[in-house]
Amino acid sequence: MKRRELSQKEGPGEETSGKGPKEDSRGVPHKSSKSRRRSKFLFYLKVIFASLVLVYISIPFVIRLFPALLGKVVYLNMVKFPLFVDLSNPGELINHTTNFYLTTEEGVTIGVWHTVPASRGEEARGRNQRWFEESLADANPIIIYLHGNGGTRALDHRVQLMKVLSKAGFHVLALDYRGFGDSTGVPSEAGVTHDAIFLYEWVKERSYRNPVCIWGHSLGTGIATNAAIKLQEKGNEPEAVILEAPYTNIRNAGAYHPFGKVCDYTIKFKKIYHSK
Image (tube, rainbow, N blue to C red):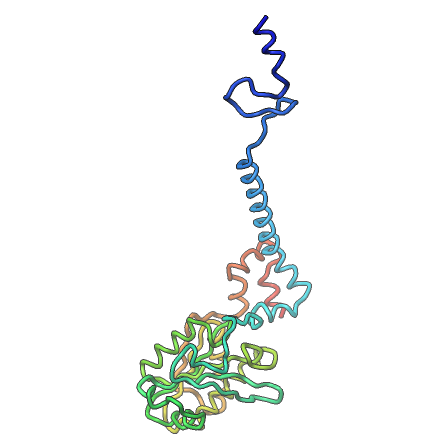
């Protein structure tokens, strides 16, 4: 009798011992809060992953529908990294450097940093723009640095290269092409090439007989090559052209880029480039 009374007191869904998970009225075990959090986390992780894959796959289709976006993808000039940097005050990032602007054509003004050789660093303190211009005629060689796509002349790896070249005894002039950084205008192949040529000729006029070289990195290698060819045609070729991480042509560079490989399996991204 006592055993029967005890069993009647136990309600449905209640545990009869301290072991095993709790069950609801249908006999289904309750999930612990830890298990629920894990399930929710995995769900959100799957959603994020699926979204990234969808964006990755949809890029070629979007470019196909809106060809004007191709230029944005190539130049990435809308990426203004690093943030919160005053490009008119390079002294925050690199010593013995001045900032100035050149108008390469009507409506287009480009920003340029000029870093003198480290050996003239102390002498450069407090000097004005005129002194920096005149310093181009000293006995030190000059490098015009043409950076790659995205970001500005203040990106860390670009600044570090300028420091290395300065310590090696070079003047370094780094520009932001039209549409990049604080430069005005819209980038195009002809436009950015013109900016590079304009800066080269401006430097050449002030360099006396010092050698002037062009250093291009990534996208800048294409600009450097174009500029060198045009300068050679004008009989004013640079003393040297240095190509860092060059590419054969922009079509192959885009088609074989990690973000472009997926297009070979969708709408043949290479055909998009060849059609332009």
